[in-house]
Image (cartoon, rainbow, N blue to C red; front, side, top):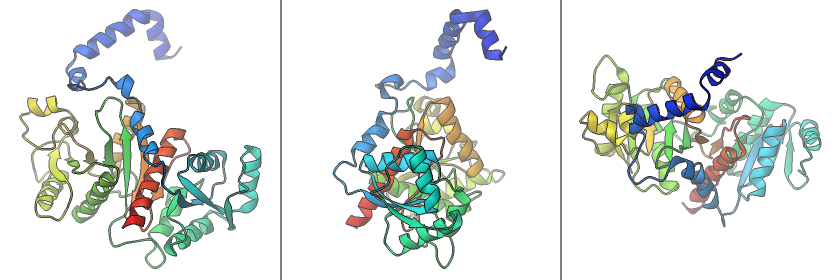
Amino acid sequence: MTLQAEFCAEYGALGLRRIKVWWRNSLYGRLMDRENETPASANAHLRHDQLIRRCAGLRPALTAVVHPCDGPSLAATMDAAQHGLITPVLIGPEKKIRAVAEAHHLDISSFRLVKTPHSHAAAAEAVRLAGAGEVEALMKGSLHTDELMHEVVAPKTGLGTGRRISHVYLFDVPAYCRLLLVTDAAINIAPDLMEKRDICQNAVDLAHIIGIAKPKVAVLSAVETVTSKLRSTVDAAALSKMAERGQITGAVVDGPLAFDNAISPEAARMKEIVSPVAGQADILVVPDLESGNMLAKQFTFFSAADGAGIVLGARVPIMLTSRADPPRTRLASAALALLLAAAKREA
């Protein structure tokens, strides 16, 4: 018998009710309460749905789907196309793609299919098409992320723009009163200060496109004070000053801030933190990939959050969805790519 089964057998519903009462009365439970906020159950995942609806009327983004050689990736492609978010260009081994389509009863007859012998060639061809302006976005299929990104960042043939390429998660957290961007939890392992500047600016630019006019950026660390013993605090303080001096534009940036006082006004008040960002962050800039990845997965598995993802800083937006992502998350990622493509058309 599992531990959970043993607990339920011994304590039953009464024990579960007691835990809920303890949570509501605990400090951590109270920190999650926000004044004038709709209950989390009522807000659950509506914000990503609203994001998808914002794309109504936009021309779908012509999208290279790289090596869609399994059911989930090809089904996600079909779903995004049916919602009017992308016009797919399938790139990969033709026989494999058609076999997957047949096995899953997916009609791909209306899609352009570019034949390549294997996944590496598919990644190279997708990047070539993007560089030539023949597609407006890339979507990862069943190949590994590293294989695709290797072609994206290639010095001579890639999609670099002079700005650091980075990944942004857009989380719809039911317990939080706004959309929350987290960066970078997928690409940059241990970014230095100038790389963090680009990571921050990429996220700010995305926030503008989704309608956040002046995003509040919290640069995270373990503590709120600057100490030479923690490099992340020094970088956070420098990024805050860089924003004041115009090296990061279009946002209010503050740090170092610990996670609790970045998202909870009560936590910030208890620690007597005076900050224009504390308790109301729109963007969380994490110190490194490890901390960001763990934070993102905690949102997903502990907070039932949806986390759409997009890669920025390249010549086209790149969707790095996981095969384990639910359909709504994949659609929200496609919606982000379309909004970015539409903004580029208007620029």
